[in-house]
Length: 344
Image 1: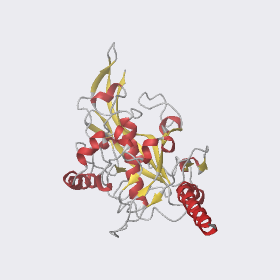
Image 2 (image 1 turned 180 degrees about the vertical axis):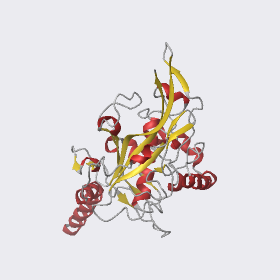
Image 3 (image 1 turned 120 degrees about the horizontal axis):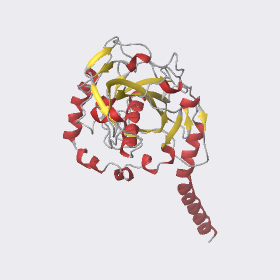
Image 4 (image 1 turned 135 degrees about the vertical axis):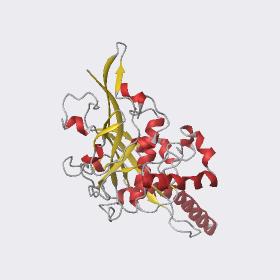
């Protein structure tokens, strides 16, 4: 009988440990991660040439070093409002949003490495290995979305009606979003993902990768994230981790697409955008250019440009942008395409 009791108590202890350890492991992993960061210096760490080209109608009036652009409304004359006001159709790229991918939950890298940590449990970043040993495994990151209309709060241009008004603000935390850590639950937002979970759809993304590396991605291939892979699911799980910069670029694209699907980000470009923002639940990936601001600000103009469209290969511009401990969280400035009718 004593031996039986001892065996039963050992069995119970093992059962309790098996149930408790999975809950303790994420907390220990999160505590072991560092929270570092830096607020982007608007003078030295933002590539201002990404605002170019500036256009009136379809004609480019200002550009340097061959900055890339998408088509603008062809007519230089426009009108808006119930009582139409005649104006000029202006096009440019507005730095207005900021996205970061972090390892530690509630770590605000773009605010100088502030560890917010309100006590809400959230999974920490992780990298997974594959038991079959077929190369790098997957990974998971938390992400944050900021409102950052830097042209307005710096007052670079005064009394210009085409700038979004506001200040730097934290708009979205994936740590409090239950969909960000669950591939099945996130199907609520993107049920169409089941249509593209096949080898043919995935193989087609190679064409999007080539297009994004040469210019802009193919807008009609909305399920592709260029050279970063597939944009679905709209969460933090990445099936193949091939470097922090590449993975963070994919996370930035996914989170922006998620903001569009939740109607927290709108369209500002094209003919519909001349008179103001409009609903765009399916993100147009050609309407964004990104610039890495942390851990190493990408201000060197490789090929004349320091900002990259969504989906462009990170092989060239991402080299040397990641380093251990303090250089494993990433932040991007988003330049969105803006068409605006400037009235008289």
